[in-house]
Length: 304
Ligand SMILES: Nc1nc2c(ncn2[C@@H]2O[C@H](COP(=O)(O)OP(=O)(O)OP(=O)(O)O)[C@@H](O)[C@H]2O)c(=O)[nH]1
Ligand SMILES: [Mg+2]
Image (cartoon, rainbow, N blue to C red; front, side, top):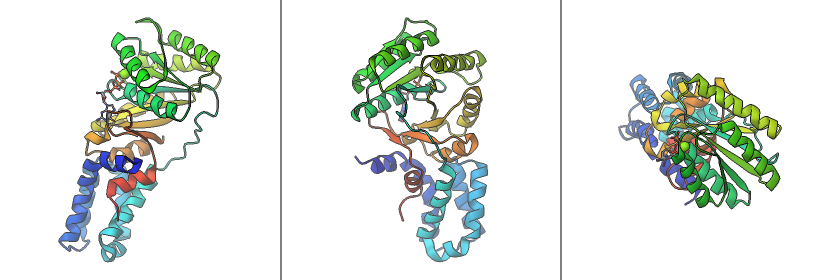
């Protein structure tokens, strides 16, 4: 399946929430009056775009209401799409593989989809000929390393783990030395899920970053914060704490396929000021898509 189709499929529930009021407007040939605009506003809020972004979008829609009323549904879709795209676009300045090994930390609360995302990413990079090492720095649970190992096998990536209960920074040190010695292009570091409120665990991430930089100057080159889209705007609070604790450079929004709250993408980017790098739209290895603001906005509001 093409990327665009997969994205469109993954966002179908959110798109339904967003576009039903638009379609009703057209079907009922209702004028674009205050009540109609309110229905659109409600839909944007229901999709979890967040109050500030929705207010901004409504200002634009109101200002363009004459043009939209005469242009019908296509004009409304196009105005909304522009607004959503604008809100999602952030310069990211990250150039994967611009140094070797390219070290990526994957962080987030329990169950957000970190391990799954690493498996998918390792597979995608491996397919493009990159030699990937995945590192199990989640040493709390033996099952965590085993889950990652299974993904590494599926992705045909190399795998590094330490003893259960080992210091994650020590495991990371070994992994980075191995990757440097063996010429890996990338190291994907799986970290234990942690509540953003646990300051000792957040400090541990900071320590891991120092250790990485000592072993591979400039590492981690990316720190990806994985957010579960189904929790909607609760992800904002988590995101802020992770961003504060240590240099989140990009976001991965997972489980978009299971939610009508895909508009939360707009809220998190706006709030955290960090670009989305990938989106998860399912549990299989192909279900991680590189983020594209234009394609995302189009999938949310539908084609003209
Ligand atoms: N539908 C769907 N499920 C997903 C997606 N990403 C992850 N999952 C599922 O979410 C669950 C948790 O994923 P994990 O990758 O284990 O999450 P984690 O962040 O590593 O969890 P901890 O290590 O326990 O903190 C698994 O059942 C995954 O299959 C996605 O994009 N869509
Ligand atoms: Mg995990």
